[in-house]
Image 1 (cartoon, helix red, strand yellow):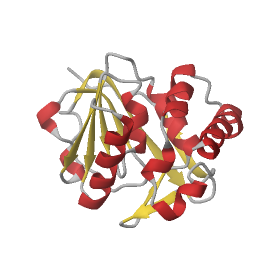
Image 2 (spheres, rainbow, N blue to C red):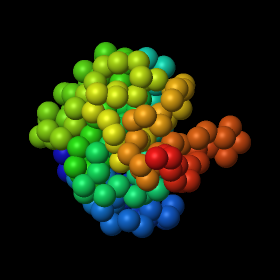
Image 3 (spheres, rainbow, N blue to C red):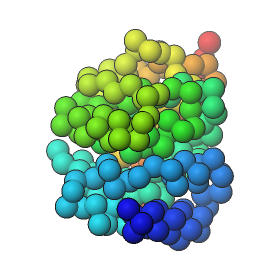
Image 4 (cartoon, helix red, strand yellow):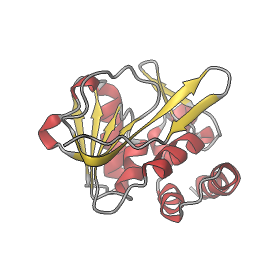
Length: 192
């Protein structure tokens, strides 16, 4: 546990801060969530490495810097209702839960959702609702959302305008094969 606590602090100081993550709420949230609980047991020793980590089903957990920049760009407020599309094992949902009022974690892979639910229970986080459904569905039952985040490289297409609140924010991390991830930070405004 001490080694992981030290690794989490080093992640913040050596990966997040030097890469323009300056929002203290985001940094604090990353410092409170134990990333090692969200990765397969064989990868727990490298849970805080500055790289994507495979979590199964052909999916990966985003590198910490990319996830932090994505959350910072979303400018999540304590009153926000958030939808995380492609929640995977729930690490970003856990961090997001410390920033927003409520989080819906949408995941279509039952095994990844099961891992995420378990890790959220270990953290005592009750403000995240895991929903197993096709990612393109957007989970309209809890709409509208103030913030919609697309976690990692997923193929989620569809009409999202019906699920985000007017003046809501939608963010994604786009992957450029030459330069790696780029958190997109353009605000998307829904017309009335």
